[in-house]
Image (tube, rainbow, N blue to C red):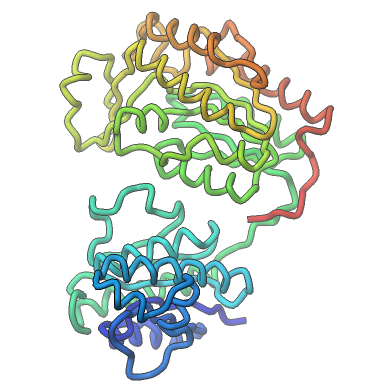
Length: 416
């Protein structure tokens, strides 16, 4: 069966460009639904979902948007309606993917629409500001795809047709190629970093699979944590092993490499059992193109590659981070067990490593012992987070939860 793509944009000013995308999709055998998010004008031909429908979905009306006298206010009304309709259309199995076109206004709306759709649903944004620092990481869906709308600010031309045709092919191709998750095994969601830094995933994957679980490991460098949290919000995990928390330290000090303000909260809100440990919570990550701020210039430092480099948190900063972790976990509605490795939390903090800081580690361990209280459970481990003893302790907690029915080993009907 052909896949149906929702094509979103302001059909009053971008009708030629949008209809070019529509025809490209149709020419490749795809189906199309059109959604107009204009405010002032009207397209030459009606769209499947009119601007009136969009405003109404937001509990408003086009005239109310016009009467606001402010284009930002008006487009936020349209963004709310469009994102709600995206979610509804997908839930009703009327669309298999979306593509949206825009400048800054259209992109702002498109990002909301993309976030309204679950992971695994193709979502493509053609924007004049794709990959721009104007777009903060927390506005990006974990699996969003973007392409720069080069030469596309005003009018259809051969330059922008290149971007538009690629985007049309990409979103339909993704919809045709997408493989739905089997959902035949319960999933353990795990956070980590590269194995040169955190190695426990190598020790845990096979034992977890032998217990009947599927293991999904997320790279905790901002977007990975966002994907992890998105799936936790959808209730997709039987349990989580959240052992890499650098995104929280990054958030605390204002680094761009963070996963948003809701990191370490969604599993707890959804009643998903959590085993947690402060892997890499001693580090602050910076983008490779950034200069290390002067305040961190005398700290332990590691240049991982040309994309990312790290500096260390001070003992006081580590204590503040631990308090933040405890505050987030205290809100959980399911069991939480915190593993506290006293010999180190990432490979580079071993003796002789570039991040070795015994004082900072001692402060972190001391603060965790002080603030991780009932109903949170904790175990102090005389080992490093990369040691086999750590993996064994994590499995022991999981096995206890399985034995009393806290963690299910059969699939519940939740899905992605």
